[in-house]
Amino acid sequence: MTLLNVVVPLYREESLVEELHNRLTKSIKNISASYKIILVDDGSDDGTWQKISAITKKDKKVIGLRLSRNFGHHYALTAGLHEADADWVVVMDGDLQDRPEVIVDLWNKAQEGFDVVFVSRMRRPEGLLYRAAQKLFYAGLRWLSGIKFDSTQANFSIVSRKVIEAYKTFGENARFYNSTITWLGFKRAAVTAEHGTRHSGRPSYTLRKRFQLAGDIIFTYSDRPLKFSIYLGLSMALLAFTYLLWVLFGAFTWGFTVEGWSSVMAGIFLTGGMILVVLGVTGIYIGRIFREVKNRPLFVIGERTGK
Ligand code: UDP
Ligand code: MG
Image 1 (cartoon, rainbow, N blue to C red):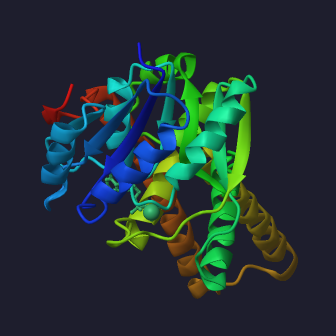
Image 2 (cartoon, protein in one colour):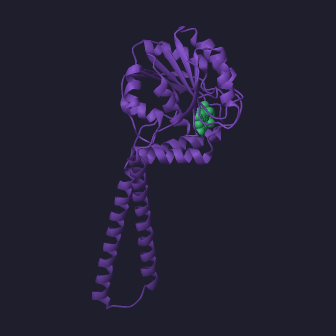
Image 3 (cartoon, helix red, strand yellow):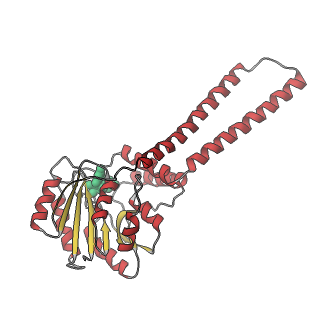
């Protein structure tokens, strides 16, 4: 049985696989010689897989998995976690923003008796505007989803065997490592560390992907949008009812007048629009039910090397 696994999803990271491997090995050797590194190529279309294969030929402690196509960060991670069989598993991004040197801190903290230890990023290298936008984004996310996200914590963490076994029972198609682990509970702690800058290559998350992820998280973890649509409907009905009372009152006291065609039209469009919004929100949830009900595999492994 190995003591430690490190799972790293990689997508179009050919420029830094070697550097990652070197720094990881150097860092983990300080902990134990009983480890395996699991590199998951998320269907990259560059030389990432060739680099991984070459490394597994030289270093027997590296296992390479290649998904059959690009499934996405959290699915690649899931694939790696299903492969992991050690007592402790470290999860990290492969772009060296999660610094391999911090693994030792994670390990030491976990040995104090915790099942889950996350890295809190102390100082983000990104600009002020980016950080402000991010703060706002997380505040909105917290409000809409009802989950207490810690914006300083991403995926960089160490978890015990128990946690991984529990994690693997999650068959949900919508997948976010951090929120799932948070949901699971267990004894949790955090260590602070500086966040590195991307070693090379481009961040593969675009703004669109980020918003998609946020939407995913909101609709997966919360039914608040459904409740909001009910409140919206209720307040509209209340508004319409008071208006009706006012109109009746006017008709009886000042006599009825056929006025206000425009206000009627406005009312029709307003309610029509709101009904569509509410239907849309419901539709999103039905779409998600559909996705989950199909129960498709979360990832498909195309190739493997090492071991
Ligand atoms: N990644 C992946 N599949 C994808 C996109 C990204 O496996 O479709 C990997 C990527 O190689 C990196 C990690 O996920 O190791 C985080 O990606 P990125 O650095 O682009 O995210 P950011 O740090 O900007 O949040
Ligand atoms: Mg990154």
